[in-house]
Length: 371
Image 1: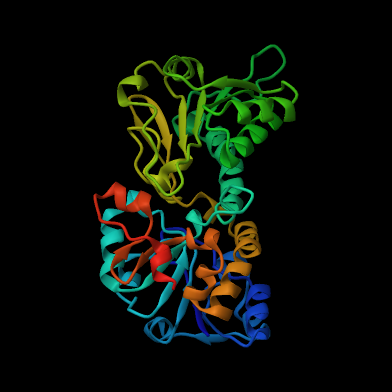
Image 2: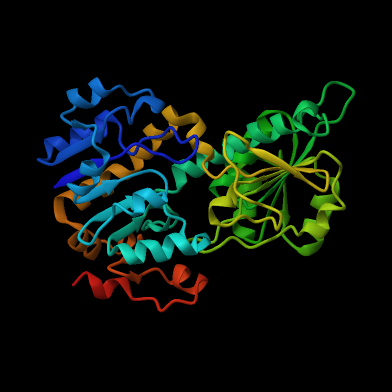
């Protein structure tokens, strides 16, 4: 199969979809991999490494896309990339379509088959291709929040661990999944007082047992959220409804009860954000202030640590990329119902129920397309 790996063009996105090691595996399976020249530089992978792995380097972006059967990316395609997609091509990347109606409709119009990393499931539960970047984002959220709390960044001037004689900052994490646990772990490691809110009692029990009472677990209610808003120095939104838009858990009216200079970090921003006042930002301008509260809402947080992120992502995606290349999308998805859950758009039709519901579209059962 002809596989293309283009350079990511989203603002301050330095990741690449495949490491040279991943390319080598595909080439050894008999596939042709074409990598856009200099696409790996942001992650520390030189063109020479891709050539040594058996890739062909391409300067002509139009030719790269036009000649590909399978396009493997990291972030959702930008408008100029969508324009290059056509019927008969398969796109495999993060899409987060439930928060992007225009992108959804543009991908439908392209006629391409679009498979999203973030909605693929696993036999044991969870989202295996979202998990590695969720781990990175959860850990980064605390770094970003701690930096944003600095006075020079518009924050309240609070140090997360405090010092002897001065209490530590209070960090509330909304959501106890992969993002939330990694954020809590980092915040605990820095010496903050940490509270995790979640609606799953079994998950709260797991966290309580795992961290031996070092973090506080609280069942998420309106009262608990209101207390978090009043008392926290840093709130990290780590809520996920797979494939669907994130619920808005903190309203603008609630910001009036927050401490001046407190910080909101919205890791759910790819799915529309879980704070009413959230809007996507970039690494170039990561924060803004609303009613005295600093908001950090970077939509591609792991892109800032591209080397680590690219390696972790390739580790997770390689079995799926190999299956698509070896079998074609229809057979690969027909043989694995968990992989089938990743199909979001095919030939003008939406195939994921949460995406269809978000925009009032008639969804199609993906299983009907793989026979």
